[in-house]
Amino acid sequence: MLIDSHANLHAPAFAQDLPAVLERARARGVRVMATICCRLSEFPKALAVAESDPDLWCTVGVHPHHAGDDPAIPASMLATLAGHPKVIGIGETGLDYHYGYSSRADQLANLRAHAEAARRTGLPLILHSREADEDMMAFLDEQNAGADFAFVLHSYTSGAELARQACARGGYFSVNGIASFRNAGTVRGVIADIMPMERILLETDCPYLAPVPHRGKRNEPAFLPLVNDCLAAIKGLTPAETARQTTRNFFDLFQRAAPSERQERP
Ligand SMILES: [Zn+2]
Image (tube, rainbow, N blue to C red; front, top):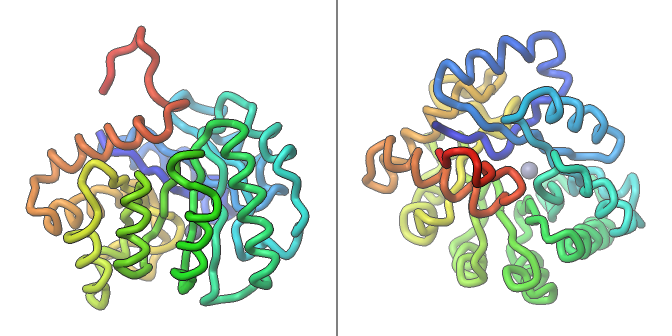
């Protein structure tokens, strides 16, 4: 079994054919999926997707691109919404200085509110970081990340030093189709040399970032085995080994999604 830890199943891109998308995913062994909330206005949609199936989950959060829409979002509001049993994490939140759609000040304020919500709820924080290595390291430090709350750096494209520091704090990483891109040698190097296999999750980030040979097309969870094959090649393991380990890691991090003791652990 494979787990897509970061998908956007409630996105308009899937509005016409979500049942078929889920069916193709299952046919490829992708059973559990998390749909990631990127602004509060879409939370009801994300939650509806999660509630439609026992193996689907969602998060609550505001993407750094949209931080400026609601810069003073209270941690208490995020924590309250996260009280729903289908919500497994806080985010995604983070810092994106590449696009800079929201000011850095708004992004940081947004990020701190999410960290506080993670602290209050005990749920892990889902972090996005792009061209913001220094400030992300300062944030992890300032917030005592890893000790006060668990976290994952998703769609990792940052440098080696941030990966080292996140790793030292017990952070997780999620690997996606970028690892298959011809020009992503640096990312593959960080995955190979710094990320421990016990801390890696798989994700598609669909409908974005389709892995080779689908690059540029709409991505979907059925393409996750291609990401897993890539990870296996980078780590010198078999796809069965990386599938097993990433599944275990997902349930270690997202404990609210873990099968109850009554059920058999996958
Ligand atoms: Zn992201």
